[in-house]
Amino acid sequence: MTSPAHQPAIDTETKAGTGSALPAASAALRGLRVLDLTRVRSGPTCVRQLADWGADVIKIEAPVDEAQFGGPRHGPDFQNLHRNKRSLTLDLKSPAGVAAFRRLADTADIIVENFRPNVKARLGIDYDTLATTNPRLIYASISGFGQDGPLADRPGFDQIAQGMGGLMSITGEPGRGPMRVGIPIADLCAGLFAAQGILIALYERQTSGMGQWIQTSLLQAQVFMLDFQAARWLMDGDIPKQAGNNHPTSIPTGVFKTADGHMNIAVTGNVIWSKFCETMGRTDWMQDERFATAPARSKNRDALGAEIEAITATATTAEWIDRFNAAGVPAGEINDISQVFANPQVRHLGLAQPVVSQERGETELVGQPILMSRTPSTIAAPPPLAGQHTAAILSELGYSEAEIAEMKAQGAI
Image (cartoon, rainbow, N blue to C red; front, side, top):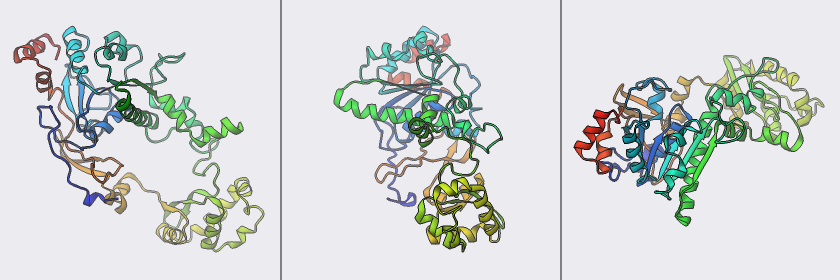
């Protein structure tokens, strides 16, 4: 794989037909038009995947400068979510605004929305309506709990999904009560799954010539992400519990004190267990009936952890990491966020990418975690100003200057 420092040059050709000179973030999805009706986080996470890989993304915003759910436009959250897009202001509650959107939808490959389930039908912009004139349309809907069913009308929020989806019951230390994780993982995963669904539908459309309606939700994403913990219940009837920093099944895997802080060690399987014991100078653990087998280590994890920390506390984190990795035992630092982006491997991978923000000037945003040898992604354009491309996009649809002026006078744009 080509390293980021030697990636092929980004194709800087203007996105076809945009009329507003956005450089292409990538050649991978060039030629696709995406209408972005999303807000908060799950929807924008989905659309960011498409924008960063070169699709022509048009962010539909209200004409009135509403407070952003993800914070102000100049804030880090908004800036990180909405790069590589154009902005069109439309009042979707006005006949002129809906008419413009319907005309735009006929030119679109993809629409992404995360309204409450009944909102799009009320506005007349639901999949069934739009597909009558654009049967190739791929329409992705992200909700809190699904588009129908007994809880579909509940308002969705990441932490609610973390709780309902079981994650909080297995996160945190035993006896300390449920604990959320430090990122909005249900939002993020729902957005990524929606993007995956869109790419699947695009591939299928090559054969069928037809679009389709894609649905996912925070709850579905969170339950799916339970992964092996869910399988433990479905297959064995085992209800996983909180294990704190200990791995629930692979012992000893967790956080251990060192002379100058803490580190992670991951000991999985008998081969690595043997290497671990040798590195620790405690080959006797391999014959100790308390620790010799995986079930025994699980039963006696606290006793084993105490013996391990008595040894790891005698040397620094860096010393132990060098020893363990040389022996083939996975071990690593526990970084704060500033240390993450100072890490030489993170820097080598190019995960912080420069951009000139319209509100903040020169800054950095989080880049894509996928490397492509021929069609890489870049942050080619900062988040747009609200309505920055309205006139250009409407002109592309055939609106005259007089018609655009009239729509503006009516408050439709």
